[in-house]
Image (cartoon, rainbow, N blue to C red; front, side):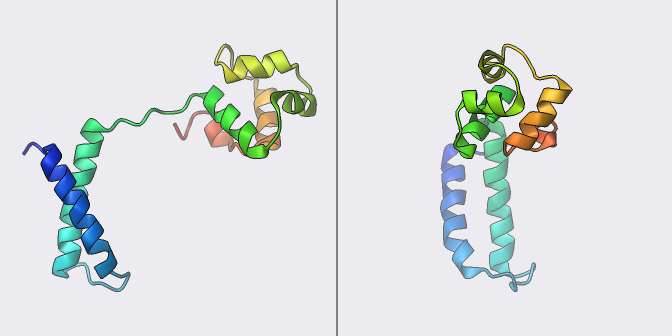
Length: 121
């Protein structure tokens, strides 16, 4: 069955209507819970086919973490003992950090080792 935009939009609207009526104590066989699961499946199937979310690059992850930490690339470079141009290379995906530098970036920024290694991408 092809999920059209109209079916997708209807399913989204129905989810918005059903969610306030369901609690964590609602049984799985309750008709509203069953309907919620069905319309959720419709939305997920449509989005999987039509709404591709770009996976961030390592450079984007590093830049976002720098912004979150509230520091500059120069401050980060000074903190971990490398040149600002090297940080720029990582941010612009011109090169990847060595294991030693990756470890230092994870310690200095809110980046998990899994993110740094690309395991969450």
